[in-house]
Image 1 (cartoon, rainbow, N blue to C red):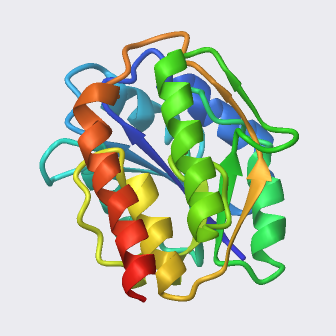
Image 2 (cartoon, rainbow, N blue to C red):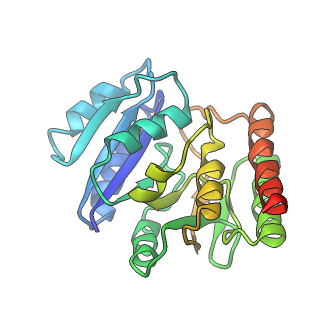
Length: 232
């Protein structure tokens, strides 16, 4: 299966070169690399354009929708030409060798493979303890209460068969898209699994993730999943 790697980027001039070089040197699976410029006001776009002369599989696309992570991801999905899509954060937090393991799982018949920090072999290094507790609680409780087959539903590092994202009516406007898609896909009957991955807090640049501002959006999908289970 060919692979579309989607990298949403908002003001990531400090990291974008490193993540692109990292992908191109460590992912030896045939792939296209779609960098979505999410209304950046720095040199992100020009850096990517320069790197596209070095790597001919890079495509730079602009998020013409409102600024935000979900719209950037949707823009990437809409521009993906391969059977499989995986989203990789531009801030170097995701463990790129995990992509090969994810694809191996997908080739065994799964539709979604979640990178999990909270199973054996997984690890979360750095970052806010509050965010860590929140993401761990959400993932583990949905696993235990509803049988959602991942302990880390909130992690953005996921691989999907393209037919999955084409089947889901995405409503999210922020980072909670990483919960919405697999939860809806689960109830549509798609097969989900997880693999361990190591997550590292960004060392350069500024994160736009705000846990207290976004907690209501995550809670919305958390309660949606529980109600969906109760109502059948």
